[in-house]
Amino acid sequence: MNKRSGEVGKDETKDRIMLAAESLFAERGFMSVSLRDITTEASANVAAVNYYFGTKDALIDELIIQGNHPLMKARMQLLDDAEKRYQIGVVPAEVILDAVMRPMLTLLEQQGERREVYCKFMGRCMTERGNNLPVPVMRAAQRLIKRLSRMLADALPDMEPEVLAWRVHFCFGVLGHTLMHDELLREVTKGASGTPDFETTLQRMIDFCKGGLNAGSSANLVSSGSQGTFLF
Amino acid sequence: MNKRSGEVGKDETKDRIMLAAESLFAERGFMSVSLRDITTEASANVAAVNYYFGTKDALIDELIIQGNHPLMKARMQLLDDAEKRYQIGVVPAEVILDAVMRPMLTLLEQQGERREVYCKFMGRCMTERGNNLPVPVMRAAQRLIKRLSRMLADALPDMEPEVLAWRVHFCFGVLGHTLMHDELLREVTKGASGTPDFETTLQRMIDFCKGGLNAGSSANLVSSGSQGTFLF
DNA sequence: GCACGATTGAAGCGATTGATTGATTCATCT
DNA sequence: AGATGAATCAATCAATCGCTTCAATCGTGC
Image (cartoon, each protein chain N blue to C red):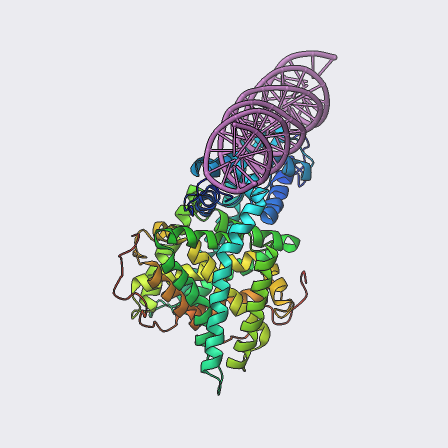
């Protein structure tokens, strides 16, 4: 045994550190939480972080990977199912969008009391580490986006691929912002946003994104004649 | 004169600090940039920050206020214009949305070479400081949201106020995410997103949000019977 | 030319950071 | 019982943080 007690520990130090770290990172961001904050919360020694993870960044990466992997896997699975189901035709855009958004909802249900933590942590990944994500996460994101773009291009043949890419991007923006800032909305609207549960919120999010994906594309009123003249 | 040179200085230390700080904060976030990073970039002394602003947080607040004020002012002005224009009827939702989004575009044009910095800095305000914004900024946001909700409720009388509040929230999510992560999109799509200028991007953003605002609202398939049972 | 107030600079404050050390504890195995 | 190796601890490292101090510097008005 490489553990002090012969039991399969749910109270292991490593797990306690990861749970504490996830909560604190979700609440205050990656940079604002020190190793001492984490180990104090986890009732562990500062050295334990280095012992189990090497560095703070490695701990963060492991948390991000652990959080993203089941999400990506579930999305891919749903896309598989959709393609199988619509084998003779084209997978509708709404079904594709659902496959991307729904797993966040499903995974949420499995989180129990930690669902709020999970939400904010995933939001942190998107907003604070949107660039510079761990390599496997980045690669998984690329695979998803690539597949997504291909399927949506079939579903919406009249839409320019470039416009489509941006609209997918917007959908992820809605997702990240919603995961992070629910309490901001509550404060700024002074209650007009109600107090919906996460499932209701995510359903509203999906509705909104569906409308956005299928939106008409207006002529560019402002810079139709100056495309590409700035910065790029 | 309270300045050493009688000139109106574009090279004043205070301005150099603010410019350098805005750029660095935009690029690396508020927490990751030290006063020494700022003063080195600005060719100034560390004490100058304390001399002109008091603390690092005060500097950040001043930058946020300075960045947000003209934006809010322009939005309110456009809403005024719209209400005047549609005095006999109701201001359409699209016009309202335009009034909120368009000033970001207009202000961008005034930023010249610093437009990219301005974009990212505003994005940082939304994503890293979404809560805990300076009091005047928070109040301005509340005024805007309140007015927005009222006008949109008139424009979309069939939509539940709560759903409307969330859809407005989603719009700001799209805005913030777009301002922050354009290069992420470019990397993850490997070029499929093209290299549009900011004006084109913002126009696409507005189109998307219009579609989202006007989207149909599907029945809640998942938790229609469990509203309010979790966390809230 | 001299004093004054505004501004700048070098140096350092105490506190905190991520990371490391070497000793120690303890279950396990021979 | 003794040896082994995983796990934990207190203590400390150098580096960096925001912030302060105090003297030097500068233009300006007297």
